Image (cartoon, rainbow, N blue to C red):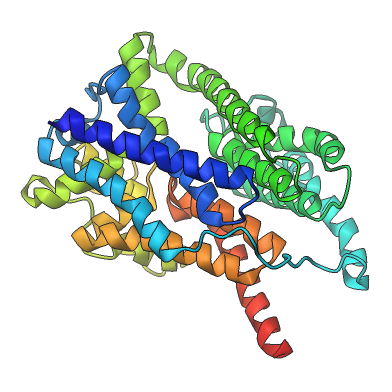
Length: 420
């Protein structure tokens, strides 16, 4: 019976995907359409892998193993997946015709003066690396991810990482406001993009850049009809190949992972959010087995106060991923050197129990509506990025982009009230 329910769930979610891709290929401009593709890949596609290959063993992740073997948890998860698209349909507007999105007046004297600054910010990662305590260590791909930074270099890397974020935002700025020859401009900026990826060393930055460039090309009309389908297929293949190389170089070799099922388990943990969502459901069903958070709203309290120094508040909550990772292994909440990748959907379940199943999708809907309400090119793009990233990462992982989005929303709304 469970296999039949999972099959129906996957079929329904796949039909929704075809609807979404069809709308996007025809030029429908709705943030939720982009977000659904991310949702399908990380939440629905694992259902297909369960049919084709089977469930991972999760020998090294005891919490996931318990949740994936509980039949009631599996039923609730599949039904929940099917309900989320319905929530989004009811709380967002799928329409093709929208007002022409606003952009900054690039002929304005202010923006003429700011453009040299934007071009300078492109190269801040180079300057940050040159002034680092040990510049040569960055010749190794993903030096920070590989744990090659020590002492002063490790502390200084916060500046290097910030410079990478600034550079990427500068790339996005230059591309979204480019009026012509956008593809040539992407090629021209590709060395800087490659450098940022090399220094950062995380797959999340590759996904962020890919989504941003894909959206910009789509928004400017380069990806319509069959070109959109080809682009989606090409992007998935390239990212899968990149991930395979990434995992082989950074994890499999160091941990001696060679068995197919061990590799499959690691891929599922990395690219699925089904495991963390099932675990959140499992701990809600059976609180006597252990809890992820110590009290409701704990991880959201951290999000609000993440920039408050812990010296001033020793008992400040930890990032949600820390609690999730510790709970999976039955440990007390503390950072163990790495964290499980999480999603807003299971985070709201962990914080607010069953009502969190409604809160999570509604947060995504609210973000989409706020971003679309601005009717502004840059805000729209950041809305696509933020709503998508919330499905695959905790807020702390991309907080600067999120707060930039809020700042732009406030600026837009103030300007709109002033005009009225």
